[in-house]
Image 1 (cartoon, rainbow, N blue to C red):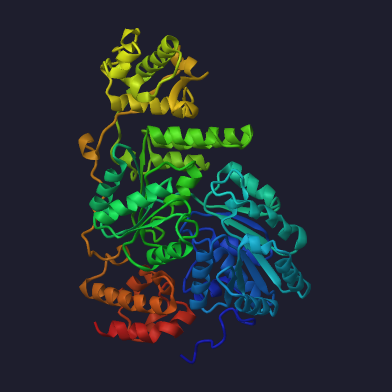
Image 2: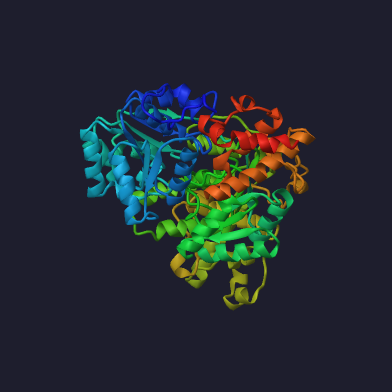
Length: 633
């Protein structure tokens, strides 16, 4: 190995050409998509706003410029990152690649913190990760001042930049103070990155971070390997269990729930069904949360049941599904959360159960928010877009991408494309429902909930109907031809479009709105999906078959028998190394790299050169061991 550089791969004097760094440090032969343009722009000192989907390679867009500028003698790059877990894994991955990186966060004691600060001030660190709260402190800013005075402050990378926007799905006020970076260090280039931002959020990022002069790089938001499925919520936990057992037995996945109690209950239910499930929410002890997150990242086949407290910065590549038992607040949140599936490019599922109560809950949260009316209106508009996606009978992907301003054609890989739903005209049912609500209010002077209104319309003489004399109103029984499922669909859409409201202060009773008038007068139509419990009932195309338990990783599916044996042996070896280094296995080598090694069946170190994901440092560190493992076959 004497031909390999003994110095760190980000040492000054080495080649600062981005393509050389990509190959030597990260082991890749070529850039993907717009990466090269972004990297060259930032290396040259330009500001950038980068929108790139999860799994698209955002990290390289600032890591390579940081290394290039360090090699050119420009000093330290600061990465603003909101999560401790993400900092730890990214720094660990950079160390594996031979790059001097460090983080400053609450996991370090005072002596460790001082050591990192000293190395930073000496210019020995190429990439320093820190949370926005720390970056904004007088102590840290004074250290940046010192670096700037000596010409050793190279670059600012602001990750998860949507957090700066009040319109974003994960607003963090401390991000707003990052304007100080532009004001205090105007000559230092900045790159802001996010996987999710609609036009409104994008404009807010530009304004709040003063990136008006920055070049914008907007990649396609499409994740073609993800199949989107939204089912009508009946018994959601049972539906989830069937989905996992039928299509994702033994796979890693994330299931999002709205409440902590729901998280706990669902995790227990899945555990009872023999699924390796763990709960994660902000109410758990921090040590328990960290333990569960580590198990999810480091073990195979773990299903994390979580609130949105879990997610941002989760880089695990082999998450095969993301499920939602409760609807998110908006499409950005949905896109960000579902994007955690299939980062490795292999087939993955985004599955959501959606029902009337989801609409009611999300509307109520907005209406009861202490925020101003302008903010509420924006949030209602964002919710409406998500409701439209859920109710859609056409291609989900076309709707999803259209929200982000991207035109597309039907994908052939969502539930609506694979099994086109029947639609029916619910206008008559909607008018009858609204008329019943109006007449009940007139007769009784009080409002009632959805179940009671549907009973009246369908002509059911329940005790409650008789108690209030509602069997005498003119609309009693005139909707007997409609099923309860159909009427719930009508109610869902009426509430979603604002033609009906739910009064949270009066026990979730229904009340008419200004929007009710157009439906009652026949000026607005209501078109709905037919409610069908399963794709088989529609006679549509079958879903993707689940591979048998114990089947190889998707990355290794094309290997022959000997290749499969090498792959499994390499995975076992990788797991041991990952445990020794306290890192997720994919930080050592991705499955795709192990599959490429297994296919090549290397006999010498030279045989390993050029395999994607094996840079100079990893070849030096692991090459001999990889050959030893492969030699057994």
